[in-house]
Length: 501
Image 1 (cartoon, rainbow, N blue to C red):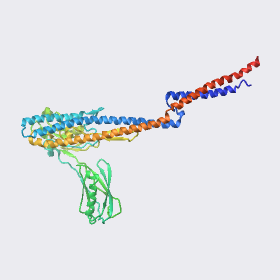
Image 2: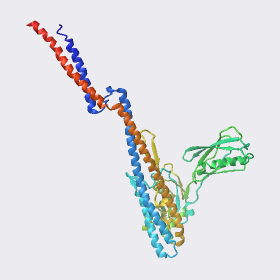
Image 3: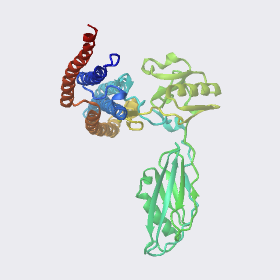
């Protein structure tokens, strides 16, 4: 017997140590509920599990984001519900004022209520917020700042003309299509913001267009009119086989490229439609300076809902025109125009430039707002966006003198103006409702995806309690047996003592 090496005891101790370690791991898994508590438990499984966890938490947060989006929409839509009520009351008053039984005093009283309702419309637009974000003041419209100038009295005198080169022709020469011959063209349009879109149309030669370039051009014209291009352009043809694109929006630029998609009978290379120029409004010196005499409305003009005027003395505006932004001057000169351009730019964001005694207004290169963009997915790019337009009285077209019920004749026309505002609000509420319905479907989809992904992740990471309990019991029994066998192995060396006695 070799005393120094009690191999039986050493083997028993080694096995006992392994069983104790296994029992410790079982205890950890049972107490935590996880099969994987550290990378060593399952390196590959841990990597997959953490990736899934990121997706699950992202999906859950995206669902919350969508819920927040619904809350935002409900806030805006609730405000527009009241705007609708105001507009319906304004229409009711306009019908009342149009009746011949009303006196001038009656109509004055009606007009007073109209003015209060106009103010409330604008207040709702300016103050409706969600999480400190203004919703209905135009800041979430996502549209570029456009110059819109109006004047209560003589608008033409105040604004000058809208200058634009909208009509542009192709130089493509169409040849006659033989009967039964099919040819196609693509039209790529580059708008003034640099966004491109391509539309392809096909034309088959028949009895109506088989002869003459004019008939062929007409056939392509009619085909293009059935596409979305017709929403932005008036499309006409000429007798010499050319197409004419006329932008419907004043001042819009366009760059249309026509490309033949085949090698058939339509002979044309890539043709470019020359771009138009951005239209702009001109505020001229003819507006004049308000010196306290005459009709003040003749001297006040509105740019994107903001009122402006040249005045000799601001106090002469009176309390009724405290909302007018003014440049104090005796005459409209170069310095006054420069000051007015700066004032307009500061108040509206429009690119206003002075040219001697006039002010030119052009669309800004930047947007008024980015709209509302919601992160509705766990990954980059999984977003949706929508816009909320300006719903002030001026933006709806019912601000200021737009609704004048002081006379029977003006009251008769006011109903049409208010109807247009009601239609705009109805359209906005309809769009909000559509977005809300979409978000509800989005939430359902996100919740389903999260649930299924969580189930898959659970199979990888979570412990099987029943199985692990069996392992724990087994290791417990083995540990007890190991301790007994170690004790017996240690007793074997006690025989050496008998030799020494």
